[in-house]
Figure (tube, rainbow, N blue to C red):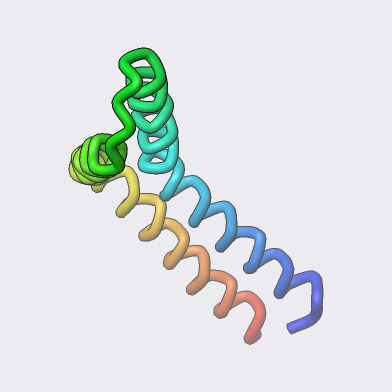
Length: 89
């Protein structure tokens, strides 16, 4: 394996991680923004008010997007097997 082949596998791995985690990260950011706006307007400064809804929203997103995430990971594993087959021969 030369350097270009290793970079190809690593690029594919990073892209897979980003695309598989993106739904949860986006939901966490949106929920956090909404809660921050709510806290700023009501002047309620409670840490659990920001923490608990984000955790619940992220877990619900994980349940909804589990099939998408598994398809991404499964596709990556199959591509890794193809890389191994192509680069070892």
